[in-house]
Image (cartoon, rainbow, N blue to C red):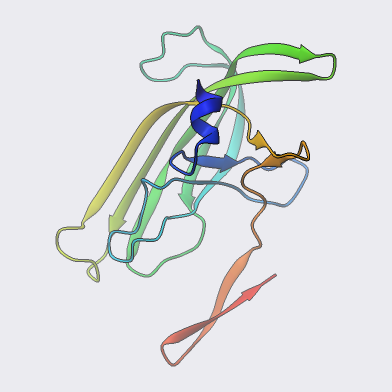
Length: 171
């Protein structure tokens, strides 16, 4: 059922978990987490991973099992955001072999993200809090058999402000 829902479109959150041996940043995007003034989605960094021999999730009826926990923050600094932080937890709860070299997996997870806005936001927007338990599957595959989903992001840094337009470079 999750695979069917995932294949229908862009209404699901997606996350990319980088390999521990590469320099890419793990991140999450969700259509539900948007800048209230601009309307674009926040790119949320997932970092400081810790492997846990036993990981329990809030309101979780599943037995504890191995998993990872990490912290969340904004991927890039944004004007008007005073603070952004939270947690990300994930554990594999089920696998099924579908061929000798392939299997299907189901993951359970938990995510929080808290934003505090500065004075440049309307008084209505002082803070936002997100808290979700979720089920996750690996990215869907295209006709070529490769995963279709998020990919590593190029690092972006704002170097200087020229007039009202920042100069952005990619590393």
